[in-house]
Length: 305
Image 1 (cartoon, rainbow, N blue to C red):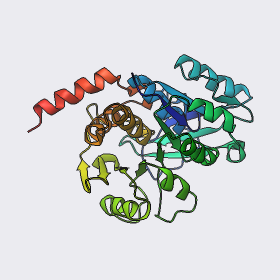
Image 2 (image 1 turned 180 degrees about the vertical axis):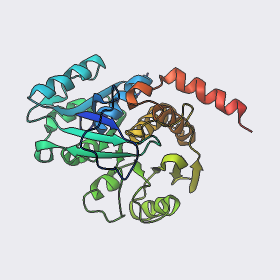
Image 3 (image 1 turned 90 degrees about the horizontal axis):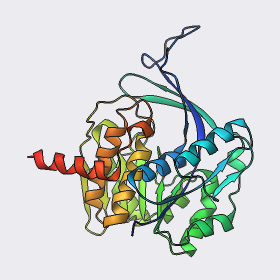
Image 4 (image 1 turned 180 degrees about the horizontal axis):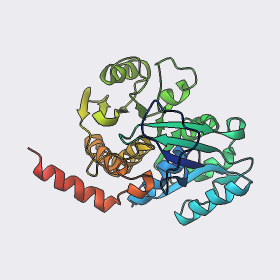
């Protein structure tokens, strides 16, 4: 039976706009003719949607706004089979604007509205955990109390602290301490990814550490063996928009790891999944299914020296 994964995180409405490059030159009016996209996004949605596309049963614990944009979010969740009793209605819908340039770099402007003060119902999350094999908790504030609920239920936690800046980061410390599998970006690390993995091992005894390194691929650290390895990036369709690449990496890793227990197979397929996703203007339009991912990974392994 497939392993059920519970995801806790934001679902928002995102407007993405292509630009010529950064820094952005001033212009009073721009006409990106047919290339501006409005979509449902957010770390929670991105991870849940990718897991669903891969074939993993997923339960999404999130908030949907009690406003017109909330109806947009609910409609997308329903279409993807993600609208369950764990999508709680209330407040205003978060929103974001993403600018991205031809090389794939992006600048994200996020307005969380009142979500920073939101409290997710403990009972609803405990119910979502029934029969689950993993809980993937993003680092939005309302997920912090859910770490203890997952621990009490005996459900292992995977967490993503995204562009973290230090091992003593006060905001993210709870996620780092609780995570059996920890994801983050290389972008703002205080040291090389390999050294960062060792810091995690020394401070938190993190069983599995995954550092997304953008165009350089990813770094995997496995505490049990002491192995740290670098996996080069693969972008079969080139790079169009890297927004959500870290979410895609985390989702694919958990899809494979939850099913096999093999972190090495998981990181190889996760890098491939994320690399395929960034070849599309919007991440979810580039998601592979589980069978497509496994087949593509097998084909690439067959031609590797």
